Structure formats: C-alpha cells, structure tokens
Length: 322
Image (tube, rainbow, N blue to C red; front, side, top):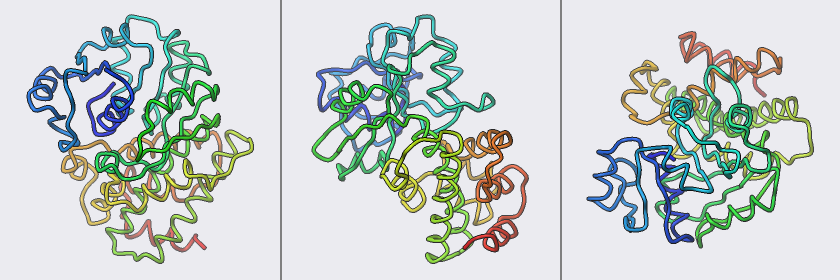
C-alpha cells in the first residue's frame, strides 16, 4: 500500500520471495507510467521490476479484498483519508505498518489506530523497523530489519518474505517501544540536521545523539515499562542512521531549516514527506500528558511550530547538554 520509496523497496524485497504481489498506488497515471517504464516513475527509479508479476490497482478495496497480508507504507498524514475509503473488514488480515509516524490529531501509534478502529488483533498487527533506508535497499547494501509483533511466529513468517542476501531480518514483541523509537528518531534527526545547517561540528553531533538516546529511552520506558535493550539496532541503530545518513529526509529537512529555509519552503523543495515534522507535534502533545523531560523534542517543536530562531534555540539546548 503506497507508491513511495519505502513501498517500492518493500515490494522489491517481497518479489524476491513471492511469485506476485498486489500493489495499491492511488494515481492511475503513475501506474500507467510504472507499467510503461518497468520501474517506479517517481521513486527509486533505478530499481527495475517484472511488471507481469504485479497486480496494480488504484482501488484500495480491491487490493484489500484480494490480499491476506497488507503492508501499509503510506505517510502517516495521508493514512486516515485512504483508510476512510475501506469498505471491507481487516480483522482476518495480517496488517503490517511500515510507517514510522503517528496518526496526526489522534496522536496514537499506527498499530493502535488499526486495533481501535478496525479491530485488528495484537497477533495480527506487525511493524517493520530498523536502520534501513530504501535507497540502500535499492543499492543492495547490507541492511537489517526488525519485525515487531505480539506473535513472534507470525513475525518470523513475514520476515522471511523480506529476507534477501543483503537484507537480514529479526523479530521482537516490543511493538510499542519500536514504534515510539521510530517516531522519535525522526524528531532527533531533524535536530541533527538543524545543527548541521548551523555549522555545528561532529563533536556536538555526537553529544546530541547521545542525549537523544537517553531522552528516547526515558520516554519509551515511561510509557511502556518492560525489559528492552535500547542498544539494539531497531532502536539505537535506527536513531544513528537517521541522524547521520545522507539519505535521511528528516536530516535533510532539518539542514534546510538550519540554513534559514522556512518550514514551508523546505517542505516544498524536498518534494518528499519528512515524517519527523508531523511526529514532532504529535509527540509534543502526547508528552503533555506523560510529563517526561524531553528538551530536544521541545527545542525542535519550538523551532518548527513556534518559529523560534534555530540559532537561539540550539544555543539554549547546548547549555542543557552534557
């Protein structure tokens, strides 16, 4: 479900293990171009597909009806409008979220939204996470994914559909922790990008990421207390790659803001969704009821939504770090 870079990378992985897939892309003109070119016309254009093995449709209901496993890779701000078109039930489906965001306005995790509004059971709800940029999947660079699900056996079965010689998969039952870390690492990557745009060096970037790891750990352990090792790649690895990688759209977005672009101008120039922009507001509102000390989240919110100067806000942030 979805026509972006991450959806395209996932489709390529699955087609390495399955004969065919159903693929929902909302625009018929994009589907026509995809069929004509043999690759996604807008994202990961260097990844070729055998289009005879893909059943394209712009009708979400047809795709849902004909599929047992549904992988949603639609940016979080656009998920609800697509789901409002659904007529069929999802209770008997295995639903997978590849979305590293929160439902805007509702301020709930993607998995929670599917459970509350569509009756998807815990054992039929999974998430894909880990330090894995779509662009590096396209280049077949070694990558690691974690499938989070309450039912680890189902997670293992689904993980086998993504495994490739260059993609290693593992499983976890910490769905809530994985989802929150996936949201927060985007926020921290924006902070890293802003600091990059302001010409802060590697020394400070390391301190920023260290403090971000502590902040993320404190929040996750507060809202979902359980045994977890935050150093595992699904948490720490994803935080680091999103904060440092040239492929991180959240870091790119933050860098533009740090260089003086307005939020609107940065969004328009990127032509891609930086999930962290929406995640920042959602997490700020969620934390108003949780009361966890989160100075980096607060700083990013102030810069993006309160229009406080990045120069001033980051200087205040540096004084609070150690």
